[in-house]
Image 1: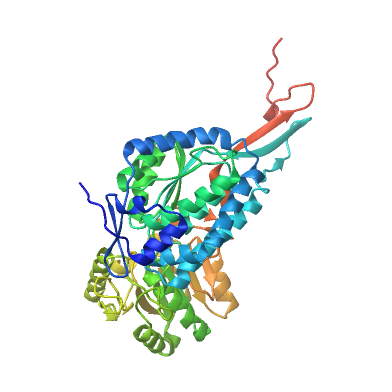
Image 2: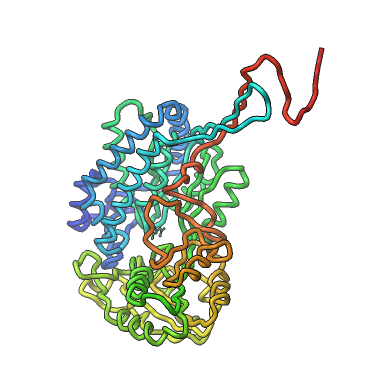
Length: 510
Ligand code: UN1
């Protein structure tokens, strides 16, 4: 039996109330939510059962049959209303993101802005779900592609972008005609409840065109996720998280010929070339490696510095690492908030020990005490000078660790850059056109995101987001990522009076 939590911390309680989350949903449940800021218990959230999960899937499937017939621009109107709710609630939701995920306020607000942006993108998209018309080899025939809603989409999201990732998927899925079931991280149910409450407000304003079960939320642990992954009524599973999780999801979804959109581990690098603008590089590295306390899938984890500039760059970088403001993510001057929990801290220390054992020289990485209290896991970001790209460097550790290696040959560094199992994001700092273009070429970075003179993190929603190899191959958000949420039909129409067959085949019957 779980007992009721007597009180949610005052600020969180006030935010939840304003965002429309009932107190009973966060006090009387069995899922305990711990604050990354001070380690205290913030809430006990009510969990959904397996039976409720089944019922949600059935409701979503029934919603699909209706929603797919609502014209796409009208579906866009629902997403427009969601965008309006998000705009109005940006301050509150952004602060709640900061409290639950531990990211600094500016990044919490940025996350909500990303949600507003994708809503706007999706509204425009609702009038642009284009298909092709294709030349046919047969006279009096027309061939075309049409795009239709694909079915129920399950979104399984991670703690570090607790709400934006839902919005990238949902805004697009909804205009594409697909209902969405959301299973957020068990470490971030509060922001999910708040976002869902905003979605419900948008649904209420939208009116009766939106069927019951169109957008639902399931609070639970891995077993709830597994039900979604295995159910044939769920056409698409979009999962964000570790490569280990994605590996299991991919196989189970494939076993039933479902579709998976996977955004998994990254092990993102930056190459600093001899001609690099070092001021720019310094800022780019600092944000990408230390921002969000290294807990983005796009965080910079590997830095390759050309030998000719290492002496200029590294001392300055060490100075920044030594002086960056660490503390309560809500405080105005903080740049580095806490790690999510002790598990993240332990994994970081283990990786640093391993790096030391492989000859790495570690600067920083230790736990620091802050005014936020002793319960949170605050660390000084670690800069690790490595003699080579050893095993620990090839792994993603979800913490602020930057492995630094020097190089002298461009071809060799490109090879090293690509010699890790992950392929999410990458960057090069150079003012040499040839180097920049080679990095972006077929023989360059093998990642889904490749940048010049900006770091690997902080992508805008207008582009397709995702990566190759163990990152899972999925693409979300902008460009033509919407195609993953629809089914394509090729249609051939004969408007003549005879029946010519393709490839000149004859099959005449009397
Ligand atoms: C993630 O960490 O799961 O490009 C996504 C970025 C963000 C998204 C990160 N827009 O850093």
